[in-house]
Image (cartoon, rainbow, N blue to C red):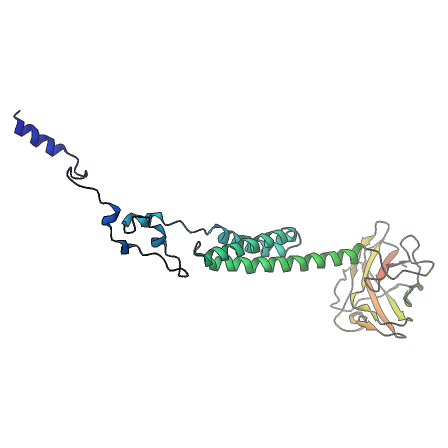
Length: 302
């Protein structure tokens, strides 16, 4: 091969992307200084200006140095706020609603601060997470307070105690017996009587026996007696089988106690129960309010 052919072969195999051998790399002084002006002192964040390296303000590859948005905390705040709010409205999840809500508020505030500094782009998500987190905290506190109040009302000690000699579960009252409370409330249950329920009565099963008796509540105290939250239970037999209450839309079986019984007032209500064959006696439990102790009667059936 001749020298000319050898030189031509070397030229053809040269890397086409390599810079020319006689090229001179540019110096920083050759780059126009105004290609990457400095950012204003109080101006908005410009990623392209911030990415310009010192001495090389006009290089186009500076845009590749733009940092990624720090959106993690804003997104986490939104997710935690949603989960915390949903958990707060349930009795079993309320214990998670409070801590999740606190985390959502903290992450949301940090995310909002990053968005204001231009470090994040999801300021709206961070704000929504903060609001939902605050809602989760408020709902959790309300539900916890409600559950605690209900627990104390159901399982705590009653404020109004029985003063009569009988009326407790171990010493039930008999027919026409009166349970007396220390606030002046008096409750009396009469002897059960058989009767035939009217047509269309709810709670009655053909073949069973229907019994009815009257419960009288007297307020001999000095304060109003709020009967709107009274409770009762009817059972029968040695195994205390639950009984169905017989009710109608009209007549004496449709009447109920007033919400408030003033001092000196008396109210009477007829209770009727469906009793399956062979069950006796009838046990009746009555609680005038959630603050009163329960009063018990054991009523013979004939």
